[in-house]
Image 1 (cartoon, rainbow, N blue to C red):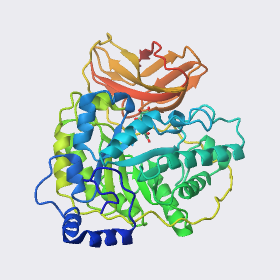
Image 2 (image 1 turned 120 degrees about the vertical axis):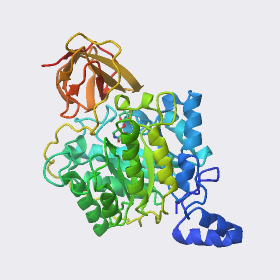
Image 3 (image 1 turned 30 degrees about the vertical axis):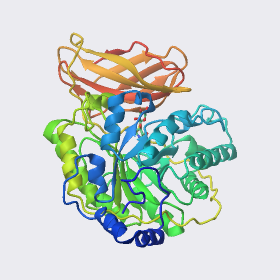
Image 4 (image 1 turned 135 degrees about the vertical axis):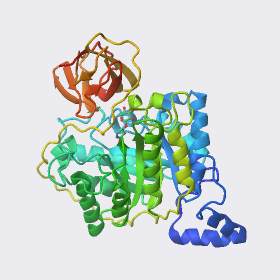
Length: 493
Ligand code: XIL
C-alpha cells in the first residue's frame, strides 16, 4: 500500500505501519472498505495511468520541466494522467544552489507546489550527482570543504521539501560503466572524499529527514547479471548489513528494450529489503515494438510487491531529452501512442504493492574515510536506439549537424544535437564545433566526446553510428557557461 493516499487532495505525511492500522480503525467500516479497495485489483479498469497505478497502491509519475508549465495542454495532460512527478532538472545541485548556500527554489517550488495541490507523489531528484553541478563546486576545494558543502546542500534542500517529497535520489549515477564489479565513476566526489562519499551522503540525508525514503539511482543497472548492477547490489547489501540508511533503489531505465531478466533484477533488489522504483523510464522506438517493451517493463514492476511506482522521463516526445528516439507515451501533439494503451492495460492488471516506512535512523556520524579514487570510468551514456525521424534538409552525400538549446539555467545549459544523413546512408559520424565563450561540457550522452580547449569533437556510439539516407539521430549534453549554439560540422568516413 502506498504511503500517501493518492486520491485525496493535499500532500500527506507518510504514516508508519502502526499509524496506518490505527487510522484505518478510526475511520470505521467506510474507511476500511476504502482502504481495501485501494489495494485490491480493480473491478473496473481505470482510464488514466495514475488511477490505474493507484489501484495496486502504486504511483505513475512523469518528469516535468518548469519551462513548459505555461503550456496548458502539457499541464492538463500531467494533471489528468499522472499522480507522481520528478523535476527534470530544477532540483539538481547547479540549478538549485547556483551560489554557495544561496538557493534558487523558484522553479522547483512551482513543480512541487502544483503536485502537492493535486495530491501527487513527488520524487526528489537529486542531491549528489557528478553532473549539473554548480561551478563553485570545483577542484580548488579541499576535501573537508567539499564535505561540508555536500552536507549543507543535502540538509538545506531536504529541509525545504520536508513533508512534500516522499523519496529522494540521494546519490545518482555513482557507479562506473566499465571496470571490475563495484568500480565507482571517477568524479570530484571520489577524488576528494573517496568511495565513502556515498555512505556519507546517505547518513547526512537521514539526519536531515527521518521520514523520507532514501534512494540510490542509476542507469544500466537494469540487467540482473550486469557487473554494474552487481556493484550496486553489493553496496545496498553492505549498507543494510551495517545499518547505513537506504530505503530504495531507482532503476532509471533509459533503454530500447528491458533486459529479459529485468523482473528478476527488481526482485533481487527488493529481496535486500529496499523498495524499487523505475525512475526515468523512456523506451526508444515506435508502434507495437515500443508498446510491447513498455508492457514488459510495467509487468516486471507490478509483479514485485516492493516495486512501488514508475516514472516516465517526460510526457511528450517533442520535449524528451531523447526526442529523436520518440521514447515517451504521448506524441508531439500530446496524442496517446500505442505504448500508452499497453501501459494502461498492464497497470490495470497489476497485483498490489507493499512498502514499509523508511529505514530506522542510526545516529552514527558519517564515516569519513577518504580513500584513493577508483579507476576512471569510460564515457557514460544511457543506451538508446537509433532514431528514424524524417530529414528536413538532407546534406548531399555526407551528414550535417545542428545544435539546439533545450534548457538553460544560471551557469549552465542543455543542448540537443541532431545528426542528419544526406542522400546516402552514413556509417559512423564525427561532429565538431568550437565554443565561443569558454563553455565546457559536463555530461554527454549518446556520443563519445573529446575536447581540447574550446574545440569539441563528438563521434558516434556503437549503436547510433548508422543512419539511413535522409534519417537522423541525436545526442545531448549539458554544459557550464552561457547557452550557445555554435555552427557544427559533420563528417562521415
Ligand atoms: C537529463 C534531463 O532530462 C535533461 O533535461 C538534462 O539537461 C540532463 O539530464 N539521468 C538522470 C537525469 O538522472 O537527471 C537526466 O536528466 C537523464 C539521465
